[in-house]
Length: 240
Ligand code: PHB
Image (cartoon, rainbow, N blue to C red; front, side, top):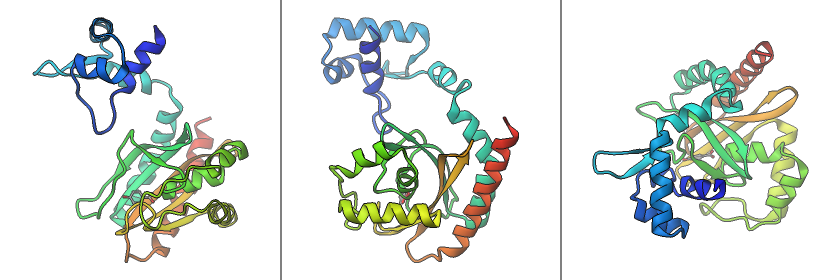
């Protein structure tokens, strides 16, 4: 039963936010009657909602339950005031991401009205080896996770994504040495991702990043990011 509920919920993505019960049946491979029954029960429980046209979306109740006491909320709350300062000073997109099932999962994104391109979405994911946040998370991840990702496949998101395992291994070592990454064009040729680690209880718990237009100077952003990461770490220590 749990497995079927998870399959139903998993058909919703950042791009596909509403679906009919028939869509869900097709995507899960469940019989139509089963999909209808499960989605009906989930609507009843508030975990799914119907829009005006009767299409299904994830319910607010699910969001409420998911955030309650989660490690994501604690990190996001500690990070938010400092992310606002980064965003006000750099005036570009500012993101907070965590490692989740071998991908970078974005907990928060702040954007300036004049900021450039950015494909990250809150509650969206990017590949570890391609995004600046992901590279930081991968550099400090458990070695077993790192080896699994290095074993590939390493998909090219753009023409400049590092997909050669030896080059990626060297890049990750340099991130551990320097404590940051500058990833020009790795996701989109027009942008440079800059990211630093955020530690909690001695372990890297998140990556804080900005997405700059390709031609923008990197050093001021890096200085602001480092300062913000240190301030978030201090707040996380106080919150214990
Ligand atoms: C990055 O994290 O490197 C990144 C993310 C989104 C973009 C560009 C770069 O649109």
